[in-house]
Length: 149
Image (cartoon, rainbow, N blue to C red; front, side, top):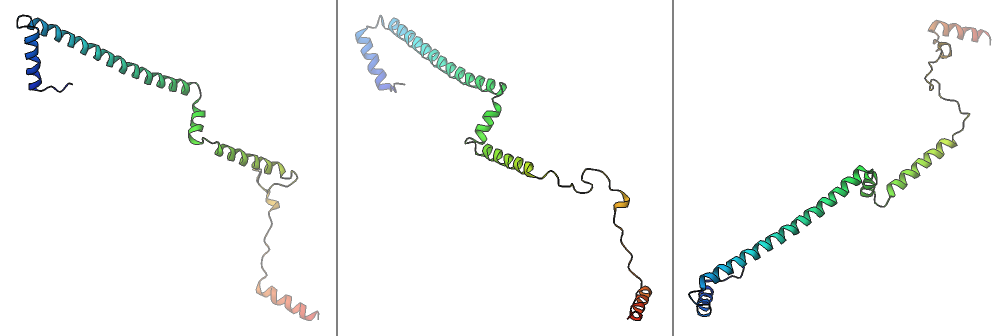
């Protein structure tokens, strides 16, 4: 702490022997060491109390965060974190309103596509494919067309 070397200790011991005297020196050293111990314990307690206050402050912040999460502020916090300016929310609202406008502007009288309502189509409504004429039918049709001329 004070960075004292052996030379400084010798000087302090010499001054103590001259000022206090050799007979009272042990009692003075004992009282000085007691005061130093008390000062160290007071400093240690002060440091521990400061650390405790810091821990409590951190715990208070954590408690507040936990309360805000449990009180339903989580959605707001997530929105603030993900989209702080609110641009994404505005864009989504714009798209939703456009989709709503497009849905409301569709004519009501337009027929639905066949089978769109989930009903099967009747067999009679299906168009039939006519068979292609065979080669003999084609030749007879050509002969009758030539005779009619």
